[in-house]
Length: 529
Image (tube, rainbow, N blue to C red; front, side, top):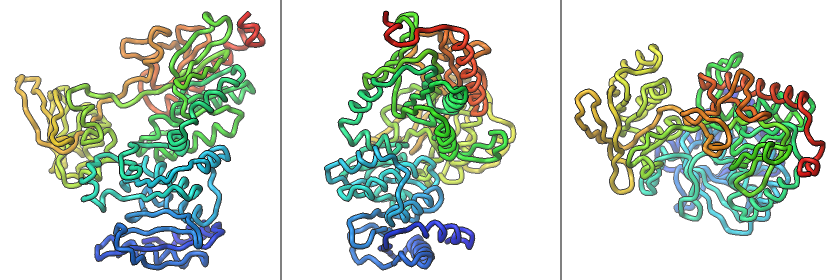
């Protein structure tokens, strides 16, 4: 299972294990069970603090294994073989169960320790899902820090009967005490905040006590990160408030067009961006959703951002970089069957549709790439494009047309996603040339039709385009003096990571130039006077 180089790396990591741990394996006669046995038998000799034994408990899932700290209640369980994206989850679990400290802040650790309920979590993942490891690792850490919390990670591809019985059609899917609890990517802080009923109130109180910033960035994607770095490098008081640090990039799989980086993946890039921002004196406020912008012209000196939790932040200048999200098709059935057959991430959810029939809506690069990826997993792919021809690059179209289990429909307007028994069973589309309606029997629908800017909260307060984008000039300035914007939320064309990074730095430099050319009150008291 592990090549010599990987074994050497893992052996070096395992030198950090402080407490003896035990791998408790539950096997059956399946091929995957034999692979799991091979993996665990390769891991055991890499550290004298690791022991391996088999589990006689017939009630546990098979194949699976627990990682337990000897003579304690600390442990986690993997049902499946945590390779691919989940190999890092396995390594971290070995280290942390073995007593190696996590990188979580002391504040978060204390929050976890204060949780006083018996919580049994189950996370269903797929090995190709780039968002799943964040959830798996976060819940593993909860169970390691607080013995009242237990966590099992389950490879949905190996436990298809359970996946179908629970009607899980998107990952990561989190169940708590036998009931659905969460869906999609979640950070440790998000999970803890949701479990701690007083977290939002405590965070709002802390935010309200902050002094005004010179530059406040709203949004933590590529544009927001670069804006924060460029502002902080000027030595001015900089803050960044983000609903989710990393933004949509965290949901992106392969990235091959970031100059000087031939290939990376969204979660890796997000981690690198966050680490880079933390190299500077930037006040990072994660999990904060902006709700209202009150310009300085109304407050008497400082721009104010009101947050969803009731707190407010003030700043001399702002950089708005709230990004964009997947566009929905807006037809009957889409919301009803979301995560019940309607999906937006083929890399995450594709393995759950192995051997089944799916559709991809959208003939641009994203849609065609999704169809190509899915064709290697599912039984059949139907790609529907509204226009009379595909919009994707020629090289992608050529690859798509070479696949035998793909059907391409152009001039096809999706009018409804249908379902039965709580999950998708097909879609209806109109042939825009003939006007005829057609129904396609399916188990899954992947929507890939572009982006919509996250700017609803700004309507009526700042000039937006007819598409909802923040209107900016060549310097990134908006219709409000001292308020700048960058990235996918703006009218700047070509929504690309590298362009957002450049826009963010430009907006921060423009904000700094604004600050040195405009006098403002020296204190909030003067602003209110």
